[in-house]
Image 1: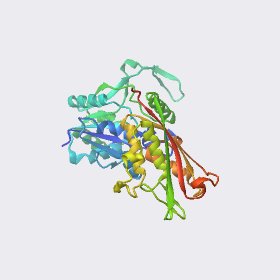
Image 2: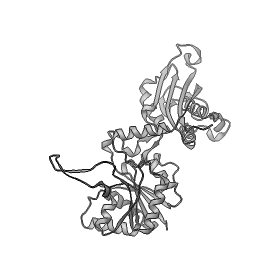
Image 3: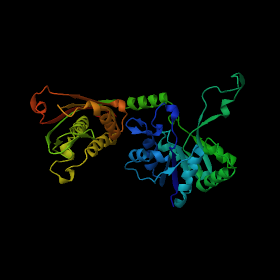
Image 4: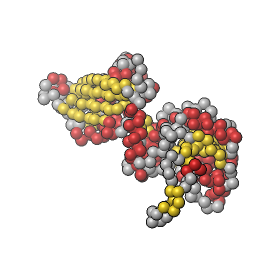
Length: 390
């Protein structure tokens, strides 16, 4: 039995955020919003299991966003938020939790202390929700926009998540609502009220905002950058000769070519240069220190593993990657037709937005080993931000 379980609702489309990608998979400070929301519960000492609810078509994005997390397989949500929460509750049946926390992936900045308060509140009440006071004057208006009355804000509260419940009580309430044909509740507290439960409140947090629009994301990103005042830049360089083969790997993208490339792992000069740039900014050695070419386990290895490692070293120090810039030097293959795919793959591995990745190319005007078509070279810089420390 898992004493406390958490359901993270991440099955929405986030259309108001103004982006084709579902907003829960947007990066904020180097991590997707979903990963930030999940990590809070994965790392909380009192939470026994974590159940995410997603759309079936988001499974690959979900796997990428939750790499390294010890969580349950995702449940698949419905058309409404209520249907998605119910799917998460049903998926938890075999774990028989005492309490369940329901949290929106769109609130990635909740704190460990807030989760602790939610659990404590649910131990005394079958239903409890975090709230914050209403600071502004609130008015009721009619269909034309004319004010009907001014509401007493002393009695008003803004409701947040995670909302906490006795698991059997919330599961029963959801099943009853489904049987009654009620699928229109906007949060679980409203459903619990309808089911006859008394809903108590506990202190929420001003920082626990829900990200909905593109402006919300821009402000969140700016806030994350502002707290990381130690700005560093690292430089990386790599070179590999051509050899036997019929393709080259550049930035994790397979590009057809009359010759292959020989060297460390899959000899991806772009990713190798980026790894050295990031490790240089961290002052943590270079690619050869962490992945010695003499070690047979790295022979033919995919270089995306090396870049993912370097990115994780930044996250381990509570930092983020602000920008990655790489220049490829070669006579062939032509980089232009593959530039967008290369940028996209780097952004995916590094967990940053496409706007933070630059890929350029040049020749050496027929001079030197690259000019003679003997190999490829890449120069890279990485700008990272870390919390300030001596």
